[in-house]
Image 1 (cartoon, rainbow, N blue to C red):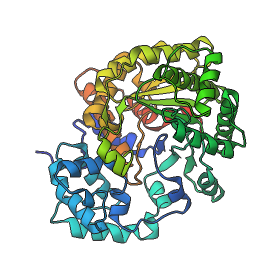
Image 2 (image 1 turned 180 degrees about the vertical axis):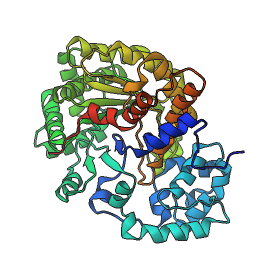
Image 3 (image 1 turned 180 degrees about the horizontal axis):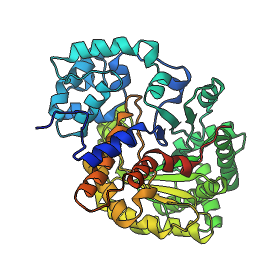
Image 4 (image 1 turned 135 degrees about the vertical axis):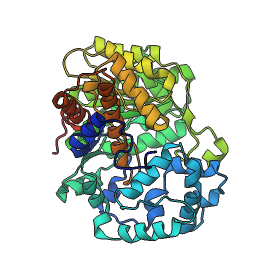
Length: 469
């Protein structure tokens, strides 16, 4: 029987261990998509305690606690920090076979060096040990990033963000490159015209462009896109339930936007045309600057309307959706390819039924200009666990080129989530190592080692071509 979370965790063979320890484990981290708050890096924040860094904002843990019968006051309510942590510790043993069990104990080992299992009996000692460390200078946000060997962080930022915190980080000469990524979802969210027009007013102020028609909207977004590029951005990101790809003519989009800007709601059909047009215009901006566009597709958000009205979005009430993907995604990419304006692209699916769909879709639009120009993205959200990662890796291997894959990201709001890169790298090394052991791949340690290092680090570094100002 193997020991839980031993040095050989997730590594079944000699080749797996060699690939991991000699290659993957040594690579720095490029976290090209996450939700870390840049202000906390700018101020080099120390967290008060383990609850503040580990439980606040973590809807994965919140869902598990609710399922375990924990009252909301101990999750997002007014209970004290230790009371909330204690309830999480009580829940942890019940998360066995959920990735949270692995992640929890991996994050206690690195960076805290704690090997005890977390439960109700160990909660107090673990909380106190971690809290003492978190209040030392070695566990500030910047020092945590250095401890995890993070070379690049790409945060997720709205076009109206000032990016002042990114500017401060750069001015301080912090060795980890912290760059913004352009997330224009709100610029398309015209479903509620009142809220949307309030957003456009804010966008007008930030861009110094009076948004009064479609062209000035595009000008305002272009102005912000230019500024993000100046600040080092090289990626955009879209979190969409489905891909927008309705056919449109520019004249009708002008009329639709005029109605929206005057406060008049439009039909769903017109709304889809408007969103489809903006998505094309934004992709053309990305292509012009050599950016990579990312599409996180397939989440069904805020299912529990009662709780969403109390707590707001991103609080643990989202699930996998089942919208049609193949035709809309194909149409969108093809429309850009026809005009030679298709940027580098990463597609992430949330529904596992779409694994082979996405893995084959990316192959339709690779054109030889860049290795892996259109990427099938890593397992995302409900799929960023062992099974989901293996499904994605196998689908990509069977239908594309795993060796050109740009690898893992955290997609997290927590500074303690970087062991997820270690989790991914172990799973990757085990997959390749076991193939060698079973005679499915040649035992060429030099080539395979380079492949592992490329997927862990070099492919992303070369693909995104990050630069500071």
